[in-house]
Amino acid sequence: MKFHFLGTAAAEGIPALFCECAVCKEAREKGGRHIRTRSQALIDDDLLIDFNADSYMHFLRYGIDAMKIRHCLITHNHSDHFYPEDLVMRLPDYANFEHESTLTVYGSDVVGKAMSRALYEDRAFHRLDFKKLKAYETSAVGDYAVTPLTAIHGPHTGPFIYLIEKDGKSILYAHDTHFLDESVWKFFEEHPRHLDLISLDCTSANVPEMTYIGHMNLNDNIKVKERLCALGCADEKSIFVCNHFSHNGDDVSYDTFCVLAEQHGFLTSYDGIEIEL
Ligand SMILES: [Zn+2]
Ligand SMILES: [Zn+2]
Ligand SMILES: [Zn+2]
Image (tube, rainbow, N blue to C red; front, side, top):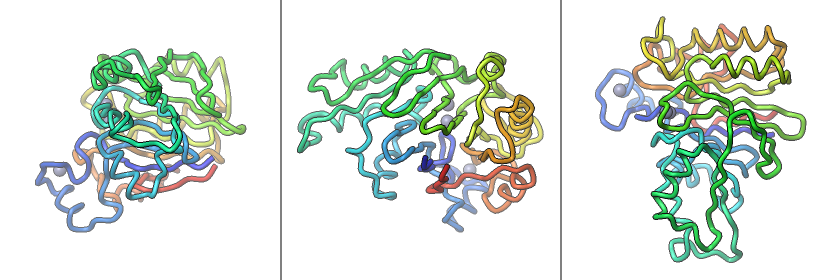
């Protein structure tokens, strides 16, 4: 499988849309990997994870053929992950198709309701569909087996983290969440498997301690890695990635953070990085 990180920031982006902090100033000056757009990922060019307001720009920047994408998993209903207003652009007249096709969006009930509101309840013409997923129930999504797991994050946003499997490979995409819920650990204890790629929420980067619920820092990522390895779900062959960064995190500048993360066996994501599994 090919895992393509299209965007790697938290809600504000780096540099943040309106911000004069040192991190954002540095990002504007240096460009390149210091620029982070809002989080989105694409697997094997056909399974999209999240659909935010940067999707249009990501498709242009990376030459993505949007018509090849028929399935889209949504982690939760925060605007840096779901901007359903742009799904309207798939409806007739906004989009002219040579061959009719459906894009199916998957997520929690909250995501489905947000999608309905944006489309004015209009899912006619079979261009868009929504399938509600339930935590800990595996569903076929195209060629993939997808299992949503509980996230500890804005409870009104219907948050999931996702276990995504195909061709004997397993990916855990865990954004946005606090240190993983005990029910997630129980799931991995009862359903052990080898994870090939683990992408973890690292919103607060190198802050020594989290002061709020809903995201993680590097220390939390290290604890998740240790516990997954102790369970036998990950090993030295597993690729661990820190991802979803906020400009408010400590040492979050790409050059600084990737050195810190590497010391603990983590890759640091950047916009456009592709990982082959
Ligand atoms: Zn987010
Ligand atoms: Zn800033
Ligand atoms: Zn969020």
